[in-house]
Image (cartoon, rainbow, N blue to C red; front, side, top):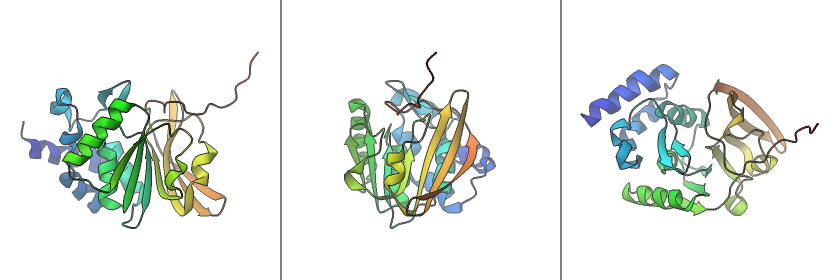
Length: 217
């Protein structure tokens, strides 16, 4: 496989047609090597338009989703970022390339170890992998300029909103199968939030995500 040709095709045939037109984001996809974050058994699929299994019921987002989220969050060099769900570490590496500091939280020990190893091998020194349950946020380094929740949540926990700075942006998939909305929430003033739905997709649920109250008959 010609890796660079496959990477070029991924950008031109999958990502650009998906309304990702920010040239800095597109350029970054050539710098942060996706194939280095994919489990060896799936390396030949590193640039395919699909989620890649990581084990433990988890998977990497499809390339176009990673790129679209990165574009919508408009990460700045001064930003402190929280990512919930490290996975392979690839999204953390993309975020770290644009931010000041990334804290990425992973509940599954084996994936936390994988993410640490991948980030270290890629020379990313401003992303810290912390093991724990981030289903209600991660107050240790709050407040944050950017929060990314990589697993879907049926409802967005209030704790995440409280950990967002004024001007901060949060991305999450909110809803349940079959309809989940990719939602971008901006803190426009203290306690005041604006949300927009960007697209619909289905991703695996966040482990231990708080559940809405349900009627019992």
